[in-house]
Structures are given as C-alpha cells and as structure tokens.
Image 1: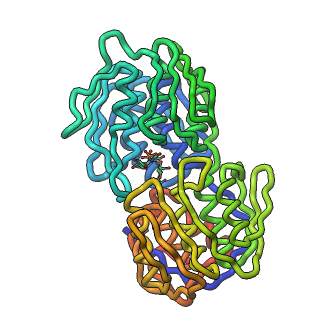
Image 2 (image 1 turned 120 degrees about the vertical axis):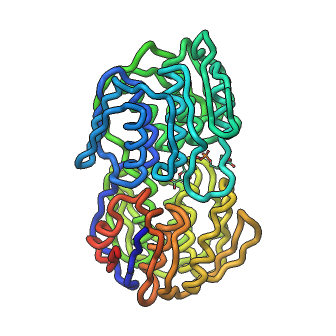
Image 3 (image 1 turned 90 degrees about the horizontal axis):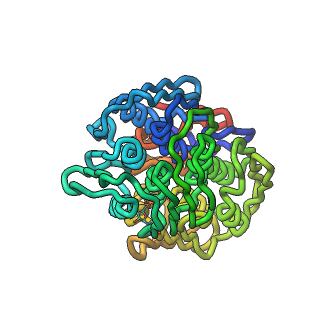
Amino acid sequence: MGKYIVQGGRKLKGSVTVSGSKNAALPILCATILAKEPVILKNVPDIADIHAMISILKTIGTKVEFKDGVITVDPKNVKSTYVSNDGKHCMRASILLLGPLLARFGKAEMEFPGGCILGKRPVDTHLSAFMGLGVQVVDDQKNIELKVASKGLKGADIVMSELSVTATENVIMAAVLAEGTSIIRLAAAEPHVQDLCNFLNSLGAKISGIGTHELLVKGVKSLKGGEYSITGDYLEAGTFAIAAALTNGEVEIKGIDPHHLDSFWQKFSELGVPYELKKNSAIVKPHGKLKAITQLRTAVHPSFPTDLQAPFAVLLTQADGKSKVFETLFDGRLNYLFELEKMGAKFEILNPHQAIISGKQNLRGVHISSWDIRAGAAMVLAALVAEGETEINNIGFIDRGYDNLEQKLKKLGATIERK
Ligand code: EPU
C-alpha cells in the first residue's frame, strides 16, 4: 500500500464534482446479473472496490468493460454460482451477489466475505431474510451455501432483524424476480438503497415505498437491459465539506443531492459553519470560531451517517469545548482516535461506542496510518489542518472508496502527494 504526504495549512477554494456513490455502484453492479440484456452504468467511481467487484463478476462469467466512468455489463453468459473471496477480492460487498444469484439460478455459494476492520459484522440478517423468501441454508460455517426450495423464490412478508444496508439490498434483489409480492419491513433507506431500487425499476422491477423503511416488491418474470447513471456520493461530498470547513475555505461541492446529508448540515449549523444548499450542490463558506456540539450520534439514514463519523470528529478537534461522539452502529469505529492522538488531538474514550473530544487543539504533522476507508479519509482531513508535514500510510484503504482524492484536493489548493 502506498502513502500520502500532505503539507497542512492550505486554505481550500473552488469547486469539486464528486464521483458516483461507491455504496450504490456496488449493489447495482451485482444487480446487473438479474437482467436478460446488457446494462450500461454511468457515473461509476474509479475505485479499488469497483475493480474488485468487476473481477469477481468476471470469475462467474459476466462480461464487463469499464472505461471513463462507464461500465458495460453483459450478463448473458453468467454460469458459475460460486463467489470466490481470494486475497485479491477480499471485500464484504461481495455478499451482494448472493441475492441476484439465488434469483437467477436458485443457488449461491461464497466464502465468508472480508471488508474493513469494523468490529463484528454478522451475516445473519442476510440469511434470515433470504429464508423468508424460501431459501434454505445448506452451510453457514466454512462457506455460505444457499439454495432455493424446489418451488422457487416466493414473495413474503419479511421483517428484517435490523436496519442493515446490504441485507436489505440483497433481499430486494432476490424479491424482484420472486413469484408474488414481498413486503420488506425495517428496510434500510440509505440513498444507495434508494438508488438500487430506482435502477431495478428502470429495468422493469416493481418496487414501491422507496426511501421508507417498508418496501413493497411485486415480483416480475424478468428484467430487461438499460442505461442508468449512479447517484453522486454523499459520503464523498461530506468529506469535502469537512475539508473546506477545516481549512476555513470556500468550496462548492457539485454532483449531489444535498438533502442526502440533511443531518450532516444540521451539525454544521450547530458548529457554526455557514453553507448554502442548491439543487445539485452545496457551498461551504468561511466561518468564525467553531463551537463544540452536544452530541454527534450516528444512526441509520436519515440520521447522521456512521461513514462520516471519523471525518467529522476531526472537525470537532477544532471546535471550542467538549463534543460527544456516539457511534451506535459499529463496535470498532473509534480506533482512529489513537492515530489522531499522535497529532495532538485530546479525547476521552468512555466505552467502545462513545468518546468526548476536547477542542480546540492544534494538530501537528506526524506519521500516521489509515484503519479503514473512512478513518483513512479522516487522517487526510487531519493532515490538511495540521502544522507541517503528515505522512499517511496504508492508503490502499482510502483507494477502496475515494476516486482520485488527491487530484480533487490538489485542484482545491491542497498540497498532497502520493508516494
Ligand atoms: N447495526 C446495528 N443496528 C442497526 C443497523 C446496523 O447495530 O440498526 C450494526 C450491524 O449489526 C452491523 C453494522 O451495524 O454490525 C453495519 O450495518 P449494516 O449491515 O447496515 O452494514 P453493511 O450493510 O455491511 C453498509 C456499507 C458500509 C456502511 C454500513 C452502515 C456498503 C457496501 N457498505 O455496510 O459502508 O458503513 O452499511 O451504513 O454499502 C463504507 O462505505 O466505508 C462502509 C463501510
């Protein structure tokens, strides 16, 4: 894995257009194998996770081409129902192929998925939702091996065991070709789940309730091919908004629906960062002193996204007073604070989910590492505001989720090099 060298203290200015959403593109890529004809996807981010998913799709027989943000998929010759997770393809999102494979072939098998180091991330929510549609679990120990009962997938009333993003996506992808109607209760409603539903509907699926926690999926016989543009990445947008606020610059972030980030902008207001929301962009403006916030509590959409918790915590180190961070979803998502501590951040960890951050602290450039995609982004953000030079190792994690991060930051005036 390479590293970034960042010189801190440069004010960011200008505009940046975010790429398509990673967490929308991954399930949508998997969903293409449900179609009978070729599918063209536009605005696809050029990131490591997308390349890994393309490799996996090729191993099962899908024809895939990726050029200039456009992916063409021909799913006609998919033959294998075995999803391999060898070292190269170690990615939790590969679990998203289970739903489409079950719908198309009536069986699916995969090695246990990898992914970021984010504490315990069980697969039970996926398996129990599949079982509701008539899927039998043949093995869930070494591999995950699933098969559909002889009568085929049957629409059902399913209550998800928690509001899980990828489990909701998996059961939607299975239900679109099931016989009859499914109700998916306690469905995740994140913008990427909505984008998957909109994509499937564009191919002829019948999903309603999109954006709510109760989806109605009327099974159809088949899905046609088509063309679809992936929604802008609100998590990347939030990362750039924090970069602008940290350096007290002025940046317009384009290519998003700014209302995907309502809970985020509300925290900007509490901190004292001015912004303006337009139809497809947001402008972050220079601010005076930042005030600590009472609590940054992550939860499922539309609450504050867990994926922006670590990046936002960097901003909290620059606010006067004590701010509480409460990570309600993941167990291991406060570890990045120990890297920030090396830069001079002051905090107290109350338990694996809660910490108090004390500001304002001047951060200084040191050698640090990224822990996962979002913690890695947080390190880059901290480096932008730190005094002197910061070296960030393990940036392969950042490459998994951020398309061309250093080029976009450079264009805004940051001094950042990849080594
Ligand atoms: N969880 C709860 N309560 C809930 C919902 C979830 O405790 O109400 C726990 C789960 O038990 C699990 C964890 O939170 O341990 C994650 O939940 P989920 O199953 O929703 O996560 P996921 O589907 O595996 C997706 C994203 C992650 C993102 C999470 C949460 C994709 C490909 N991955 O993962 O993205 O953090 O949802 O929003 O969509 C990232 O982009 O950096 C990333 C890790």
